[in-house]
Amino acid sequence: MEKQDLIGLSADRLRELLMDLGERPYRAAQLYHALYRDRQWDLGLITTFPAKLRQRIAEEFRARVPPVEKKFESADGTVRYLLRLADGKEIETVLMPEEHRDTICVSTQAGCAVDCKFCLTGVLGFQRNLTPGEIVGQVLPVMQENRLEATSKKHPTARPLNLVFMGMGEPLLNYDNVIAAILLLSDAEGIGISTHHMTLSTSGIVPGIERFGQEKVRPKLAISLNATTDAVRSRIMPINRKWPIAELLKACRRFPLRPRERLTFEYVLLEGANDTLEDASRLAKLLRGFPSKVNLIGLNPGPELPFSTPSDERILQFQQTVIRGGVPAFIRKPRGRDIFAACGQLKLAGAEMASLGAGA
Image (cartoon, rainbow, N blue to C red; front, side, top):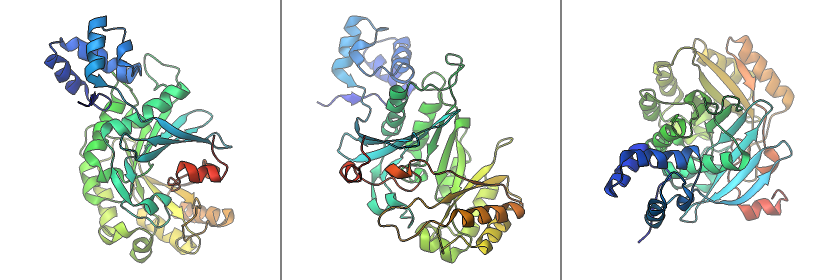
């Protein structure tokens, strides 16, 4: 009989399991702290348990985080982790260290069904949704390896740690599992990463956006827009055929923002497709009046992608036009391009990366 995995289970579920074993509720709190706060996954070494209970827990359960199959290190400090799931599927997680903070980019699906034409993950197609344990299990080993902590009373001087749900997959198409993972990741009794330091990016799943806005505990929201007309957006993002720009922006206008919160609109610039100054002017007109900002991203190139990256001059002109139109716009610096770890590049398997000389 296969052991039940504890990573991804809530405090309430752990309490039920231990009460079924005849243990008192405080033992569940000890187990929860050991798994998520202390990152102790060898159940036989949980020192807050007496020896007999340690043995019983280790016999009946396991605490599995996806092992790192391969690691790739960029010249800019970015680290790309190739993780292997229990069924052999592979997913990718990226650590982006910066001067004053660290950011972990998390995957929510193996592959992706949305099929954006500028994204390498779309080439894979959809494989399956990740469980809460597989989502949380990406963050825990990266924190462990790099000695990262969320800022808290216990770690008041820790560097800010951000999470972005912008890896492989569309988070709002794995809604329940993603929300369950967010609750675990943000719980102050466990991992303790504030939702103010989390951002979830969607390609524009309108029912998911509406549902997400009603969550009591949720990250900030980013919308991957990438075009200013339905004709162009439908060509590069087929999801637009189901929820076109007007319907998407209507949902964004209804989204219940918290005090001082803004929506982020992401715009990947593709040479000759969506990067004209007319596009920039239309973008400003579409977003004017929103509590929002725009992140401009020059295409991160890769094999099998039918687009090129605009020049730095063109990207700067696009930014200036959007700003003149009354909308804050920022050029997002690419991280990890040399190891295919940048936005839209998560696809290559370990053997392919090694052939490019990027393995570590």
